[in-house]
Length: 95
Image (cartoon, rainbow, N blue to C red; front, side, top):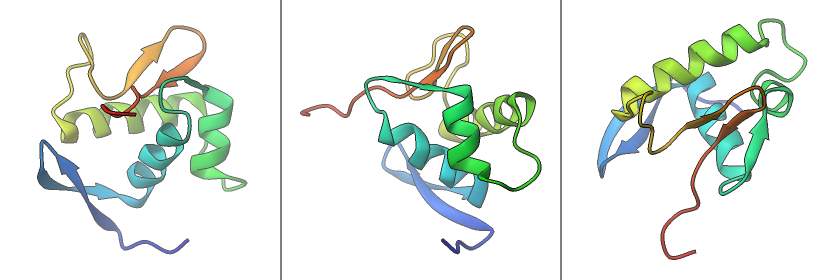
């Protein structure tokens, strides 16, 4: 998939710019919405076979994405950490 370097995403119905990596992260999390995506699964989905995919890079990408979405890491609403396992995204309302 080819994405521009900055792709629009929605934040409270307003657009915000995300990088291609952040977009792939959102997509990877949405595939398991309501469940937990493990660190390994997210790294594979976001970075594939390319270098740079590790837990620290994932945590950094999550932190940047949370800031752009206005998500508080202490009380997250969109990207929720599951200690020692991975991250989850809640199911959309009305699902």
